[in-house]
Every structure is written in structure tokens, then in C-alpha cells.
Amino acid sequence: MIPLRQTLEPQTYPIVTRSLLAVIVVMFLSQLFSGSYGEILVTVFGFIPARFFYPSQFGYLGVESVATLITSLFLHGGLLHLGGNLLYLSIFGGAVEHRLGRARYLLFFVAGGAAGSITHAFVFPLSEIPSIGASGSIAAILGCSLCLQPFARVVTLFPVVISWAIAEVPALVFLPIWFALQFSSGWLSLASAQGTEEVAGVAWWAHVGGFVFGVLVGLLLGRGSPANGVRGEESEAGR
Image (cartoon, rainbow, N blue to C red):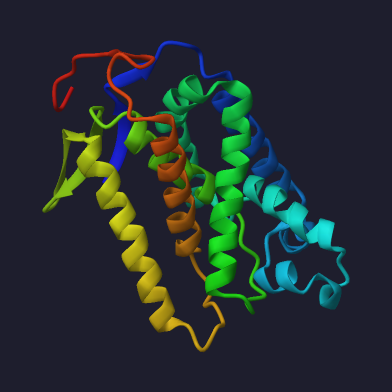
């Protein structure tokens, strides 16, 4: 399922969300144009679970290892990885930013990403594979959005046999399905791993950890409604 937009939109301009989108794109372009240094950037600034728990063995200070919880959020592994994160952030980020306020939203973005990375690290504590991307942060936004905008409808593109269709899917359906897919994929990744070593691929447990973190924050804020800082917008499936 590919989300296209929400039918409940924020009343204020999502300046932090737009700024994050711009920074992520600039950082990705920097990776592309860094040539052979791109792999070094990922190794140095990516999040490595084993290095997080045992920084001295990698020649890092503890604070340097912790800093990668943040720096890793702004690196991406390819156009598909980048495009997916930008799409979800642009669709779901604005409403959460409006509800939390700009400063708290930025802190929430970083904390959600850190929560996701730490979850991933506890599942694969000995992994030396760098984990990069804002997926944990975006998963946190989705989890929070589920609590703050349970009545939103997500205009969704999905495959039907050999064609595509567009329909409005309630957030109460779309977001739990998204989480279930991440959790099941994470569970399968455990079956593919040998011991505590991670296999190369998507850090599914970072998505799971970020989403749960977002849900907890959303529950603390209280359930939202169409009157809670969003504007209802009528739309028809397929428009």
C-alpha cells in the first residue's frame, strides 16, 4: 500500500517537517557526490549496535557512539529508501508537528529515531552492520498519528491483480496494518539471523521500536479528533 495523502490536514505550515525533508535530501546528495567516501560516511556516522554497546573496541568514545543515534537518521541507502521515507514524512509529519509544537516535534523526531535504533541494537547487540535512515523517526510519527488522528482517512494506492486502484483507508486500519507488516518482517529477520548477528537488509526492529514509542507519546497527549488542530477535507476515492 502506498499512501498519497491524508484527508485531515494541519492548519499551520509544517516548517520543521519541510526543513527535515530538505536536510535529508541535501545529505543524500552529499552521499552521492562523495564518491568513494560515501561508504566511509555510512561507517562513521551510521549506527552500529556493537559499537554502541562497546565503543572502545571500535576506537570511539561513548559520547561519539551515542551521537550516531542522531547522525544516522540523515543518511540513506538508496533512492527507494529515501523516497519511501520522504513520502511518509511529508504525509504524516505535519499533523504531528502541529499538535506537538515545532520544538517538541523536532525533539520527538530525534527521540523516535533513537528509540528505534536502540530497539534494533537490543535485538542484534553484536551486529557490526551500519544502520542508517530516518525510518525509526517516521515510524514514531506514524504511531503518534494513530493516536492523534484516528479518524483520518489515508488516500492509498494499492495493486489489484495487474492494475492499480486508489481508495481511502481509515488510519485505524492503514497504520495497524503497516505496523503488523513491520513486526512480521522483523520476526522473519530473526529466523534468518545466525545467533545474535543481523543479516544485511532493513532494520525492521527499528521500525517496531519507533512506532511503539510514537504510540506511547500519542497516548500521553490524548486521542485527537477532527477538531484537534486539523481541518477536515472531503475527498472521493480515485480522485
